Amino acid sequence: MNIQATLLEKMRSETLHMTLLDPNKQPPEMAAMITGEACDLGTDAIMVGGSTGVTQANLDATIIAIKARVDVPIIYFPSGAHAISPHADAIYFMSMLNSRNVEMTTRQQMKGAPVVRKLGIEPLSMGYIIVAPGMKVGEVGQADCIPRDRSDIAAAYALSAQYMGMQSVYLEAGSGAPQHVPEDMIRAVRGAIDIPLLVGGGIRDAESAARVRKAGANIVVTGTIVENGGYRERLASIIQAIKD
Ligand code: 1GP
Image (cartoon, rainbow, N blue to C red):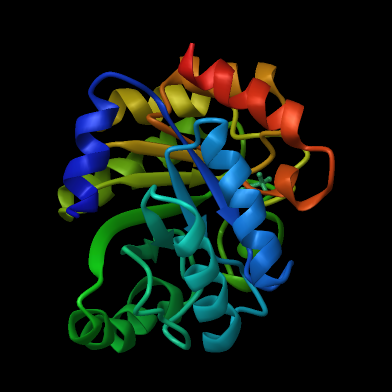
């Protein structure tokens, strides 16, 4: 399966929803159950990753369990080259553009590239941009988080990603952020680039999902909401808001 082509084709007619699961936060069987439910509700792909605590063992076990349960693409969302799973359908091959640390912009990528080639995983290149408050990923990634009122900086980073040949841009407020990326910023970035735009962090209800979609996200990512029980209705309403 060519994941990039599949996603692009789908994005021509609709906004996509991706469910992010952290392999360090639940046992593999639970991950499989959650993703199964998410797929029944219409999520388009599963992203697997986390800022801390991802090991080769929990990553492999989680992806294998999910794969046995769902048919949608499973995309690894890495925090570094220390763990890369041969079981993933694709990997977001990303650079945290506003990190102060070269490990996050290019060095982990240098370490990971030969492994990705050897394993034959499809790389989906992405410019990863951390917006305030940035939460854990902003801290671990040593990001100069984009101030929430500086849409111009976000748009300039996004355009630089496009000019560097990247296939997508991810505007990230950080997992568990009290507020999602501001709509003005999403709009500014959408207007600045032609490549797909992912938006995530702090999207917990249908209203937020609808706002993010309307502002111009091509892919809306949610993670935290499936980490607690009783998420079914909420996830259903979020996906519905994205697909309506
Ligand atoms: C993290 O943006 C995602 O990369 C998900 O954020 O956990 O807040 O949904 P949440």
